[in-house]
Image (cartoon, rainbow, N blue to C red):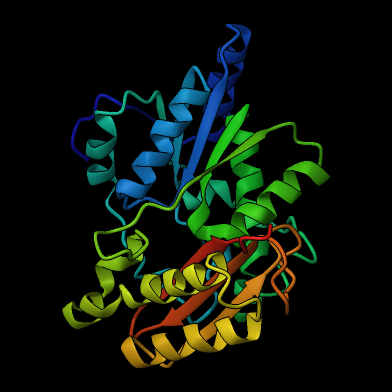
Length: 290
């Protein structure tokens, strides 16, 4: 590993000790959990986190628990040196980069699970995924002891699940949600975008186009039918990008339950598979009467 000015902590006990020291000093600790291979979207989360606290920790850990047996855990992009170079200009305090063998020691058999919110959308297509997410986030919270943690709205269901977990378990951590950062053609930034081939990348903006067209239809009062929106978004993506669509859904922002008639704010969410990559995105829409 090349030298970096950023302090990198890999041991959970050492991270906890650092956090205790900061809290004794009256410092407010912010955490940005990531799986690394950072992009501008991650960096925007870090910048937002710095505004909410005195000390900033970025965790980098590719969490095996949230990958299914046929998913891309082994090929998920990893480059810690590159990540540290990107973070050096942001004046963060610590990168927490635990080793898998110590973070999940032999015999690990304890999990955290949120019911209800995890049943639909990505939860239906990826059984066990959110149990892995909530377990690792809980472990990261226990290691870093943050006062505030920042997550992106691109993973809307994940953010909703974590907010519910923090509330239900009285964790006392403020959860801040940051807006989705997009490429010039509207594609939501993701570490997985680097695995798109040139043709897929050229067409991937169709996801944003389909969602944005649906948003405009709702906000201009052209339709209140969620079924119509689902059909239009699905048809657009199937023709312009890929017919291999996990879901196109219109849901309540709080319960994540599907809606039929749009009378207030909704989240329109999409997951589509290409040859090597699964892309997700979402967009909020609100009818004019609301």
